[in-house]
Length: 334
Image 1: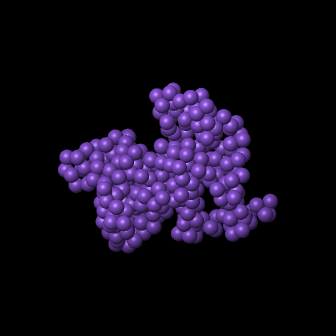
Image 2: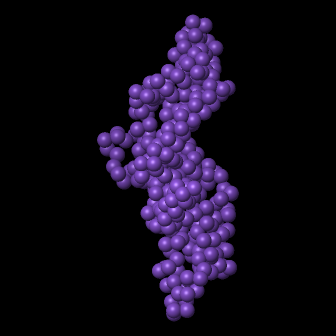
Image 3: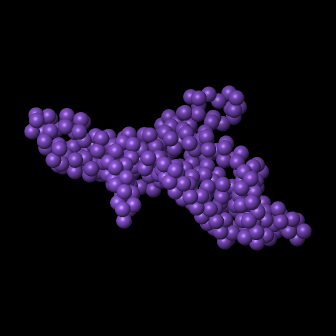
């Protein structure tokens, strides 16, 4: 256990270090001038050279990249991720405020896509070659090739503009004080973005589960169950679902990175104030501190999802733990 914790902690530290360096370098070599991007080109040209120099110093564009990173890294070790110049607030405060909306959106999409994808995959695999199987495959292939932002625009136009079932965007009603916003108001605003994000995430899980279902239905233990008089449905429910759940569970946790990436586009289309929208704002404005902070949070989020998948895999399937133990014993003998 100590070896497991130490190994994954080292991986986590190296991941955070690499993510911060890459984010800083990308912002540093970006052609976007943070000063002009935030004050406007016309206003920038009408400023005096002294004012321009003052703004460049404020945004840190005249400071060498390595010096900016060293200063940020030193502050980060003391729990300070810097100040977002775009939002004029500490990075930790911006991330904490925005992460609530993003986590709500991604959690809803993650659960819906997992349940729906698993159910569609099992149904399609159990009815291989039939009409429902072809329909599920067509549905998944179309969704897998559909850009997330395009689907979000279609959903927004159909369900918000034409039908008027959902609001056009944002996470709360416009013109309503924060103290007067109810839980139902927040849920009403998150439903359409969550459905958009979940519909896109169904394809991979459904297709993978379908192939695994077909393999299990052709396995020896399912055939043995049939010889004992069990129906195909009973054999699949009692003997196949556990074997189907393992790869689906791993794939579901591994899809956290895709869900986070998709949420960036969905939040932009629906003007949903989450981490994705803040990341785009930071990138277009050259806000290095906020962009690096969001990068670290997203990297930790994905790392945690993969780690949980590995742990749960070993808990659900004891053979994984035995295999690991056997490998260690063999290595010690060698």
